[in-house]
Amino acid sequence: MDFKKNKIPDDVKTIHLTAVCGTGMGALACMLKDMGFKVTGSDHKIYPPVSDFLFEKGINILENFHGNNLSYKPDLVIIGNAVTKNNPEAVKADAMGLYFCSMPQALNRFVIKNKKSILVTGTHGKTTTSSLMAWLLFCAGLDPGFMIGGILNNFNSNYRLGNGSHIVIEGDEYDTAFFDKGPKFLHYTPLITILTGIEFDHADIFKDINHVESVFDQLISDLPTDSTLIAFSEDKKVMKLLDRAKCRTLTYGIQQHSFWRMGNITVDPPWSIFDVYRNGKLFSCFKTRLMGEHNIMNALSVIASADNLRIPREITAKALETFKSVKRRQEVRGRKKGITVMDDFAHHPTAVRETIKGVKPFFQDGRIIAVFEPRTNTSMRDVFQDTYTDSFEMADIVCIRKPPLLDKIPKDERFSSEKLAADLKKKGKNAFYFPDTQAIIDFLVNEARANDLILIMSNGSFDNIHEKLLASL
Image (cartoon, rainbow, N blue to C red; front, top):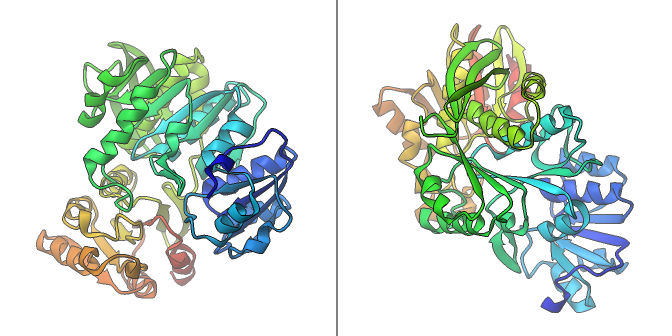
């Protein structure tokens, strides 16, 4: 491509988004539409919930990628990170000499502009943390914007323009575009950065944990001197990199040396009640409907950010109490015959372990039936084959589905659900392997009983197992 055209011209009125049905791209399309631009988009597959938002906004979505989609000569083409250089629209944009850019470039230019951005990064907890941060700013009357990788129940949206001076961005370490292999989060210049932890993930683009650490190292090193980094002190990899920061740093965790420290946690369903210490002194007691220590840690980072912004702790407390979480994060999809069906996005071994651990105290009268579908580029690889055996320790019954997209992975690198189930059985766990979703539903209909929690974990739709299961119970 003519990389001189990788820029945003001064006078833009029409914009086309290639791969518009990605969560971030769909949100950006809606934002641009709200700002008055003429917006079109295309994708290989048009699917909800993003497609529903786009249709409601009146955005013309074209199914499949085709050079003709650009025949009206848009002023700018925004290219999603799933698009390759051989994509028909990328090829056509180059042939037509059209200006193009990545999603973060467009977000910076049209949405963030001169706003004070709060960037939430890290391997785990980004969506919940950034969502809670956005809700807190809203409760404080700051009218924030946000762009987040999940649907916030408080707003029924994953984006908001806002008229205030703050914007919350969920910034991931995944690559930006085929013409920019650097992480998305390097494009932003935040006022506050929350770093929730660093683990190996995204095996399709990162070689190993050192490779992952290197991009977070660059992020920390590049943070503006007048910004603040709020970092998770329980992660040794995070703490190792803090010396690279030129900005103010504040730590949060459970260690005595953490500037922001979580104290006692009490579970009183539906509430998690916890003490917070600031620089060794009791700051306040808070309560939230979020479950699990991992989510309390997410809340702690938001409390630290709010204090840094001089938001009164009373407002922070109210925001925590009224936060309705995010779709697909510990989301109760329904209850039948006393059986609760919960949906969660967990897929990394740590996320699976902490999610099960987090919900356990809230369902003491029944069993935790963990249902897991490995379908990310990392979980379908054998990189975590052995690690997953420790993730289901607190589950009473474990159901493992065969990965649905294994043909995308080289044979010698494929994850084995059968092996995981067998290894769990060797550890004394009541674990089962299933070749497809219907087999899991049939098993659960016969197995589940009143007071059980069926915790379904996948980063995909899982063949709409939640609704099918509820209908079958």
